[in-house]
Image 1 (cartoon, each protein chain N blue to C red):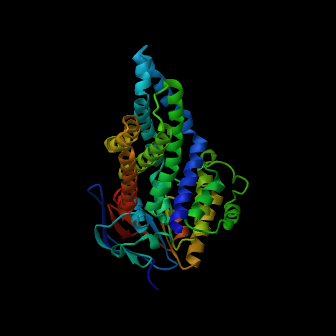
Image 2 (cartoon, rainbow over the protein chains, first blue to last red):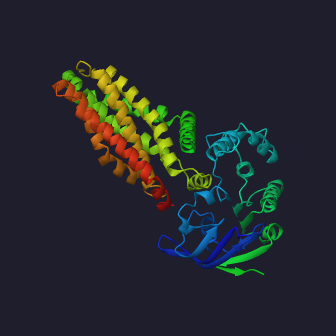
Image 3 (cartoon, rainbow over the protein chains, first blue to last red):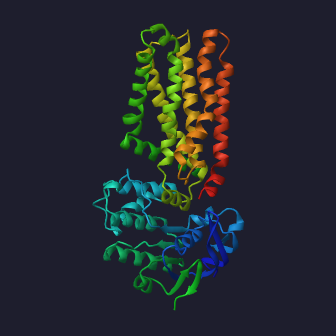
Length: 214
Length: 224
């Protein structure tokens, strides 16, 4: 089977500064790769590159079978789920309205929203505005987004930071479900224990280069 | 079909957010009306002059305060939200159209309220048939100004000085809209025909729509 992500000697620059250089990374179907590294080492840039949100300026990158040279990455994007540093909710909308918005943009059946809210334990808070919710609750709604969109490539960038044990379990379940569907997950974290429990392979990113952590 | 569904969804959510925040009603409209009141005070007791320049003041204030409405919407987009939209498969052109739709509704509403306030406070001279021309040109200016603001928001997305830069882009490009809007009423007074000015506004709106749709995707990729 084709890899979910395949980077060969990938380099990325932002604002004229080289952030990633010579990155080789292969994520097989069902694979779970953890990436650890100091602040400023390029972890978020790597995640956003894997999400096809950033362009590479050297090497070869193929995500979900599509290369940057194919021109239309939007087909790959709709199968990618990303949880970044900050929840991407609209604060003025309620939690259920945020989920409905996501479902409508992605042309997903809105009938599944209630179930997603139940899974993340927010059925009772569904009508609360996102601006009035805690960070953990907003994070859970992002997990609910991903339960709706069912990505084949899951990218978690410090997604579990600041979350309680039950929310971390939700993330672990999400990672397992992506693997069960034949997808792959890349997890970025400072927490080695978390990476050990979630991933089958951990790499270290240092000064824009990936190395085996163990 | 998917394109229009996405565009209407963006417009729907923008209008819900606006209704809850109330920026246009609570901030922009009151300030614009206060500015309308200040003009006659600054001109002193020359009531006829106020009446003569009434619609000039309307167009000047409409453009200045309308720019705030046009630029405000795209400023609400965080990088995280734009990333999410991209990963949901939202077409950048659909976002441009949706944002232009919601902005157009807000802008037209704002300009109509300002028009009523101008009529009540400044009692401007209106030639025969002037009201229908004013309403048509107001709607066309609202559409063009919103498209311009949305386009400027896309161009400056992600920049730290985006607010100042977007204003600098919008101000000169809004001139044809101001000229078309104001001259359509003037032409009625001079009895020289309004068609040229209305066509100028329609052409401006269409050109901005085409530019917005065509540039949406490259701009999104370039500003990421």
